[in-house]
Amino acid sequence: MVELAVALPILVLLAVGVADYARVYYMTITVANAARAGAQYGGHTNGSPDSMVLAAQTDASPIVLDSVTAGRYCKCPDGTTPNCLTGNCGTYGVVQAYDTVRVRKDLATLFNYPGLPATIPIIRTVVFRAQ
Image (tube, rainbow, N blue to C red):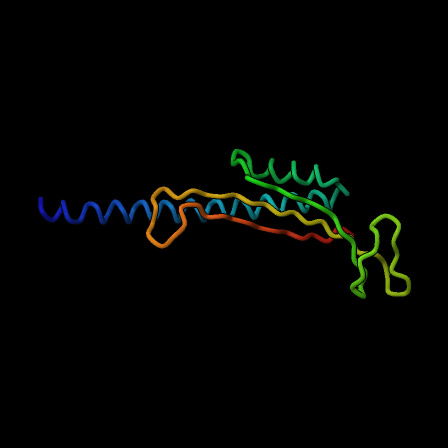
């Protein structure tokens, strides 16, 4: 009985730690996949930022993401950033369009571990070349 009384709290703490690690790992994969899905949707369909946000949120379902931001920017091979609709790169080639999606999910841990924050921010950004 004494051994069980000493060992049980340690085993329970170990089990909760493993469960928290698994939750963080799962959420990291979900957030990364959602960001990738949003950027790919925008790249394949010339979608608006709102449609890329919706695609990311749909991919993460049933997880509710804390924030999703999306956008499109253009770049020339020489590094300049022209307007995506009217710009050109002159003799440097064609304008390259990029879709970007940033997803954030804050995950609260099951147990407050000493030295670690109670909430772990999981942030992933994906940039997808559309053209």
